[in-house]
Image (cartoon, helix red, strand yellow):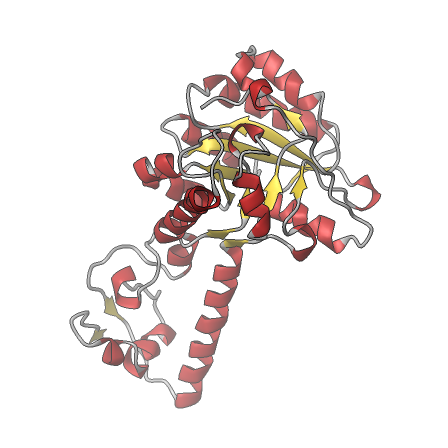
Length: 320
């Protein structure tokens, strides 16, 4: 048994002694502080069996130089793949564009469920429970203030494998200059990465307001601005059945569904979600994340983004 001492200089801890431990016969368990990896709750942490920042003892076998090099290569490859899975970029075809749905080949019946204004106590976890039970991946548009207040809830979203998008720091509808827009998007972008190691270049303006400076800035920064083609209309306080009807009756292939997990009481949304999923599946729909939907659209050489009409600020129904 060989003990790894976290107090050693990084050049010694990251050397072949530590690497050799990875080819041990037992499960490799390292503290996240030791390797500088994300905490145990993230996909990266889980992939490497990270559990805490404590000191662990590693069972080891003597390895040849080739074995060590092979393991080092495998780790680098795995890390690169995991980082890729935590990067929700803007495909080149959609960079700098505003869309409300994605045209996919043969009008394939795929649809993206999206949730705004989280992370939020109780309701975000309620949505996660429904998605988990139904094996559905969705896209969550976070607000910076909420992420700052409820980081542990956000980590559960990441741990479940959902996609993340930018919904500004303050969720402000007012006109902003370029400097303020940069702060609204940039500050949230930085916090998302700091807490979850996720990178995202997908944006939705608060309230769907397209002409207050935020969308212009986002498009100039090559974000894809994603609106919606189906609206649950939670701000009108529909019944559970009413909310279901709002989503299901407006569903279309390549569509983007707007719902909320935060910003207020979303219990009706949580109650309606299982039936929404069931009914859309009955109609032949498959659920994908927004990044996957964009990827499908880009891969189809004939796909085109559908511009979203200008929406007057005084007609906005999204709350908070």
